Image (cartoon, rainbow, N blue to C red; front, side, top):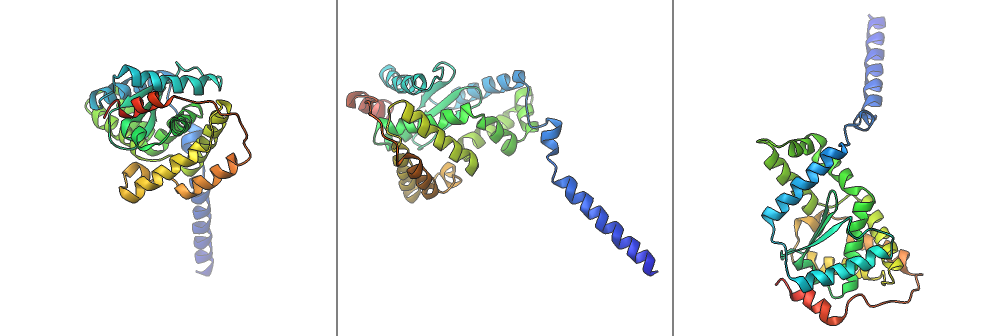
Length: 263
């Protein structure tokens, strides 16, 4: 009997060890289930952008969009990025928000621009968002938080596609990337700004504006962001020894026009 219980106990221990070991393996990654084909990604990009156009009001003010494009071109050309590879859109929305879609669309809410003080701060936001695009953070976020099955459902059309699209857009616009990805995008934005002759301390200014927004009214997209104090600290370390000759980003008239164009 004792031998039976001994064998039984060893069997349970062995089974538990094997189960634990197997549970630590990234089967999704090994089997390639966390990736989409280029064709599927392109279809998903088109569907999401179409949904944005149906649900959001895109600002058509030509002077405001010209000012935004001027800033965008400066950031891209100073960093050997193709400004046409990503489209920047000004969305009429009071929420202090900005986010990127897969495939090359960055959406900047008018409420965010109105909450910023300088065009350099807006450049910091753009740098952060294009960093997410360039570093392939968006697909990582979608695969992790939305799941490949839901992404395929959205891309595949049919009755379930509508709800899947809503869920994907909700995740992209209202929840943060994990700490590691946010830090990587923050620091990449510092590099972009420095190369463009824009004071990267503007990034710290953005964090301070977001802290003020949290204290007054906490939107869901801010509530899940990594600690803003933590982000300010590593940004201070990253920018403290940077010396550059600053070049104006936008003149005051263009900046004020951009801030007030889509009230």
